[in-house]
Length: 139
Image 1: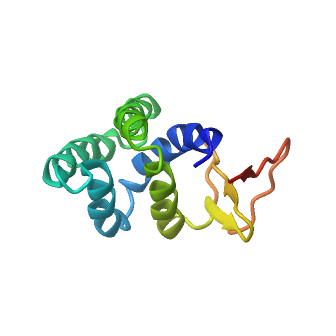
Image 2: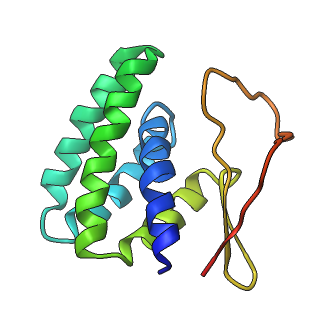
């Protein structure tokens, strides 16, 4: 996997995992993310660690500082994983593509599209207008 995509998955993947924790989809996504982090050997430990982070996300009630701290905890865990297994970034992309398809998409030909909306903006529509530069990451 491209080093640029690995770095982007560190940034956006951690925030997306932390955000996913506050949704109903977490019940289905959590075991896959725990398997990814545990690499088949420490899945239960990874699952327990994720549940501690999730409890804090849920208790935060939208507190941006707490949410940023929890995303940082996920990012640190992903950084260690990606250093040992760079291909894990693509595995995370695939998981997030399944559970957050509007944010993670792979075009035919290998272009990865990651569309993260951050800040206090609430989006209640499938239509998002983005200003600025849009970059696809080539595989």
